[in-house]
Image (cartoon, rainbow, N blue to C red; front, side, top):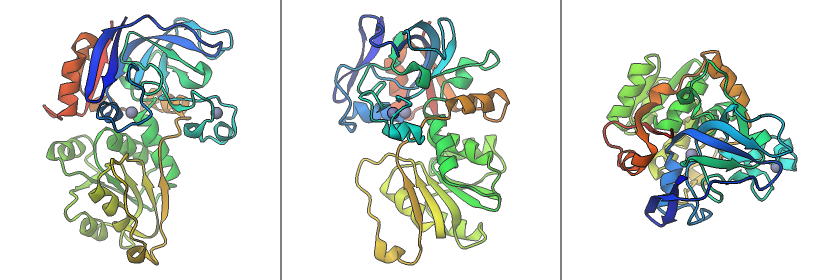
Length: 345
Ligand SMILES: [Zn+2]
Ligand SMILES: [Zn+2]
């Protein structure tokens, strides 16, 4: 089968590999029908994910059809159309039982697919702990509607959930990239008083204005002042930072009101500084880290009910054979790209 592979730093390639086989009774083999490219794939390509194993098939956002299941798999069966969770988790350890599935202590726990074990920018993928990691896609939901469920949409859902958003809140979301837009969609479901999106890229700012006209849009320069003018308590009640730069990190806590919740879901290339003397008395609550992707079934229900639609994010579609070109467009942010999907026949 064809599999897009991390060959070494700055080099991915489409190579032929053997079809994956069941390695444990908890595994399922999924025939991938649609995969997408995520910014985390680029982090692997550029060598900033030390855990990534050279030779691994990349890709951790995909949907497909169950081809084969191990004897312990009960949730899905051959022929089911499924969304694959970015995180594989056992469902039994201390962290899983508390919903912190990102910290699952199993050897395959957390983000393994397309990083430490073969992922889904390929014709087939082996999914460990399939009862936890696969969600059945209802017939009324298309592959394109479901493809982000296991990763960026899970991240947006989790970000909005842990931010404890109330109806009177002003919520600032920093960045309108793919994760930022998913976060926006999930924040909108919480019905806060106001949502402000901060985005410096004019195309992405226009995307928000066009698709979500009720949302206030600002740019990093002057963002703090904009939030001050458009909030009830001299700053945002909730800030969700999904950009991942030094500037956006500072903006996140600086635009927050005292006693706000600041949720950091961005991935940074460098350590960030908390200038505690400047922040003294602001009494912020920080929540940080990587998604706990344990709400995929719920998210699919919301898509089925028409409450979430991420299809406008898909700006480009390619065949697996043309995946190098798909990466070139995505990586260089050409042609107004937001998300690229790869179709696998
Ligand atoms: Zn990702
Ligand atoms: Zn676990």
